[in-house]
Length: 497
Image 1: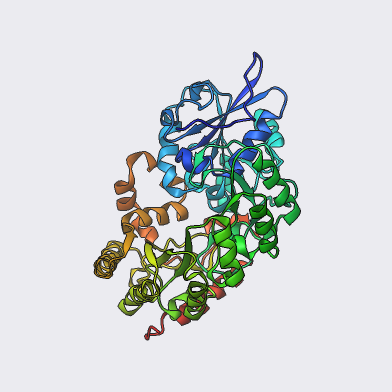
Image 2: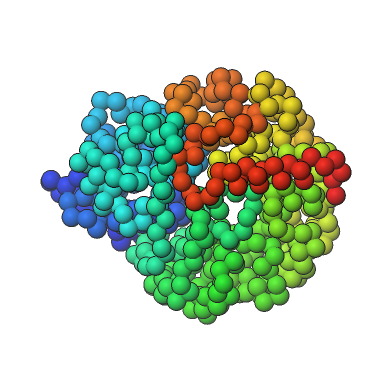
């Protein structure tokens, strides 16, 4: 870990309650998470409480960054659970703390999505976005009560089999954290500016647009003010949002930040928002590469994903950056419902056309994880409908391996650097995202045993009430089922375009 600037550090004194803020993934990604920084700042602003941070790759997540204090010596342990793959580490860490009296609380995207696999390990769950609510959270758990979004583990289990629902807390985005920790994160040393939360698009695979709906934007003047504060500390700002350039005033605040002399790094953007002015702006921001996420090579598969972007729009964006930015990274998914070898070949052909336009291209390919709360939550992992019962789930994994092999071979022939992920890891993610408390009990046994014991969860999901539907994100269950049925009509057409 590199040295960091931490104006929020608070020294412990006798009588203070110690709060451990645990991010069970890397320091580089954790320090680039503005939500974690917000929680840390809020705890340390409360009289009688001190917060210290824990990361996977710093003291193996057992001792704090600030003072090296062991996690077992803290009064409250707050976990921010961002990714299903982190569940194994969460289980391992908490299994070592059986003899401590520390209160264990989980929050984050995975909890908002489906907390059930984590119920064997936590006392409380925070169901929602915790901004400006941390003090209430601490008061509730310390007093051993429940309050709206702050639920005991046993309550979560009861709700999953009842008709009751819990409304997810979704605050307005008004003020923004101005005092921040600056360390060497995934965006480099920079200030973080969250320009928006949620997404106005309607991609059928995306859990972000579902669990963070409605889409909310910060006022562009607030964004610029944070940029002014950043300038006194570092030379770079990272703009955080599912699609930064979807902000209605993105160009205005990006030019303002550039004119301050800051390097500006948008976390992600849509290809259909890149015009000539945006291309010039990206160059002025200091960007050396652009990421484009077609998600699928064929138009038919992009319709299944409701990506809302055509090949023509992809090349309009590519032509806008031509001669200005030479590096393009492309993201794809495989294992989609109704996917054929023609769709796999379309990924290679689309990527080849971008390369031939004069770019250095790199590619990332992941199998689709059918996420709860999305229209594709019902789909079988791997996209093979003969696996409805899950009995042939391992055949689906073999089929995905065959497809990844085709892609790896094809990209090698094209001279394109590609990261094609292993299907088994994403099968495990599917089980964890759909799982219940019984799945959680197997986290200590590793991925192979989990996959062996719960492969039935990889088939198509029935239309019965789903265990995670007690978390109310504001959508109609019937509507999302109808959306899935319409997508299948597109998916099961036999000709890839």
